[in-house]
Image (cartoon, rainbow, N blue to C red):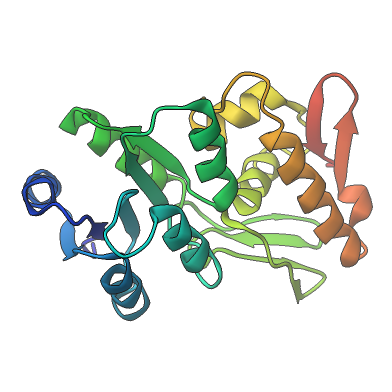
Length: 221
C-alpha cells in the first residue's frame, strides 16, 4: 500500500516537530512548510494526500491559502486554529476547509480527524444511471460530461449516491460531511445543495436532486 503523504503548513517549528512525530508514528509520510508560500509550492509539486494548515502564518492568512488551494485542488484540508468563534468556523468551511481543530488539541483527536478525511476519499466508484462518481480521482461525470464540483459538493453527492432515493436531513448531511461541526442555524448545507443543483441543471440533470420540504435531500433512484 502506498504511504499517504501529509503536508503540514505551520510556521512554529516546535509544533511542526510534534505534528511530524505523531503523524510519522501513525504511519504517514510527512512534509513540512514554514510559510504559506512554501506550502502552496509543496502542495503543487508534491501532491499531498491531506494538508494540515495553521491559520496564523507569517506571510498571509491561512484562509487565503485555502482559497488558493481550492482553485485547482480537492485535497482535504484540516485547519489548525486558536480562533474559536462561530463566525470564524463558518468562514473556514465556506472557503473550502474540510475540518478544523481548535488549539490546543490532543494528538488522538488529530489522528482521528485525519483518518476520517482520508477514509472519505478511498472508496469504490459509484454510479446511478448516467451519473458516475470516482472517489479516487475525485471525478464526477453525467452523460459522459465532467461535472466540476467543489470538494464539499463532491462529498455530498458521494453520500447521496450511495443510497439513491434515501432522504438525508440537513442534520445528517452536516454530521457526515462536516462531522457535526456546523454551528447551529447555519445554512451552509442549503447553500451547497443549491450550488450542486445548479451544476446538475447545467448538464440537463436538474431532476436528479430531490428536495423533500421540511425533511431534506435525496437523489432520485
